[in-house]
Image 1 (cartoon, rainbow, N blue to C red):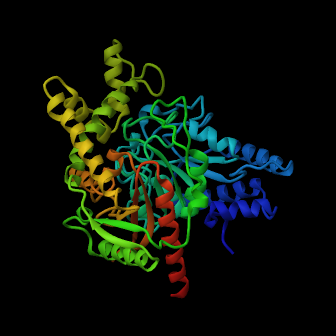
Image 2 (tube, one colour):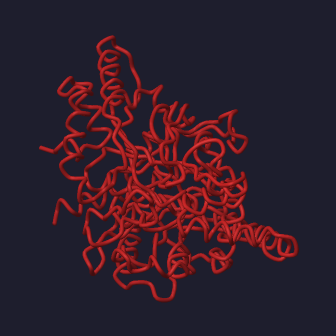
Image 3 (cartoon, one colour):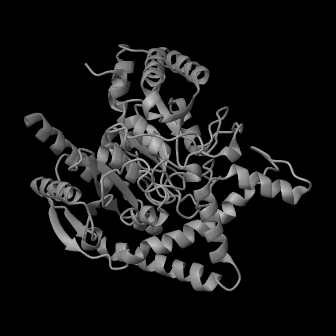
Length: 483
C-alpha cells in the first residue's frame, strides 16, 4: 500500500470520496512525514499547520454536505513566490523577512475555491533567479534522488517535495525553465503553461513577459487536473489571455497514432551527457511504438536564446525589484537619510545573484545601450517565436531533452554563473516564444539521477503535450511493470 506522500491527486481524491481517509487525516499524515524527512531535503521553508488543519476541516464538512469540488481536501505545497493570505512570502530573500501576505494570488484563490488545502511554502532561488536552489537566503535544498546533488531551480523546493514524497503536488513558476528543469532533475512531472494561460496576479514578478505559474506533480494526469482549475482569464492581470481551455483530462489518450512529432536538431547540443541523449532517444522510440511519426525539424535561432533571455529577463528584473527598498514592506536597514537607508537595505537584503542580474538589467536599459541590447534582444525573440510557429505548422508537438545533463553536485556550478546560464539553453526558448512545455521522467543517467523528456506545444494547446505526455507515461509504466 502506498504511503500518504506517495499518493497522486487522483488517488488522494479517490480515498477522500470513498471516506477511506479524511482531509484532516491526510494533512496530519503529510505534516508528520515532512517533519520526519525534510530535515535532510529542506524542501520547505515554512508549514502552515494551523491554516492547513482549518482548511482540511472545512473540506471534510463540505464533503459531508455533498458538495462537489475538483480538489476538495487535497493538500498541496506552494512555491514561496506566490501570495497566500496569512502566509509568509519571502521569495527566498532576506529582504522580505517577516512579510506576511495580506491577499491570495488569483491562482491560489481558484485552487482554494475548488477545495485545495495549502500545506506550506517551498524553497526557491532568491526571487526565482537561479537553477539550483542554492541561491536561497533560507537554506539549500537537496535532491531526493541523491542529497549530494542539486534539485534544480528556481522551483527546486517544489520539485524536491513532490519527488521526495513530501507533497502530493506543488505549484512552481517558470521564467526560463524553473519548473521543467527541477522536475527533470528530481524525476517528477513539471508543466509550464502558455504565457497568459494562468493568471500572474499575486505572483511576485521576476520578468513580467516571461513568468508563468504551473504545476509540479507525480503524474501527467495530476498536472492536467491542476491546470483545469488554475487556468482562465483574469481581469486583475493585463497579461492574461481570454482563450478557452480544452478539457485537459478528457483530451488525454493512450496512443499517438497518426500524430507527427518533431525532434529539433538544435536541442542536441555539443557537450550533452551521452546518458541523457540515450534516455531521450529511447523515449522518442517509445513514442514511435505508440504510433507517432517522428521527424527531424530545425529551430535555427535557438543558439541566440540564452543571450536574448539574459538581456530581457534582467532588464525586467531591474525594474520589478526596484520596489524592494525598505520603505513599504519587508526588512529595513536604517541610514542617515532615505538614500542611505535604501542602499543599506538592498545591500544587506539582496543576494549576490540577484544583485548581479539587477546590475546587468540596469546596464542594458541605460542610455546609449538600450537600442544596442534590449531592442535587439526583442527582435531576436521575435525570430525565436517565428521558428516555433513555422515548425508547428507541420508538427503536433515537439520532443526534446530538458537539460544537457542530469543534476550536478552541490557547489559545482554556484561560482560559475555563465556555465549555469548556458545549462538553460533547452528550456529558455519556450519562455521567449510564450508556448507551453512539460517535462516527464524518461530514464536515469549514468550517475543514477533522473532524466526528463521535454514536450513542447503551440501556444494555448496544452492538451497536445498532455496527450503526448500521458501516452508516453503510460507506456513507461507498462515497461517498468514488465521489467
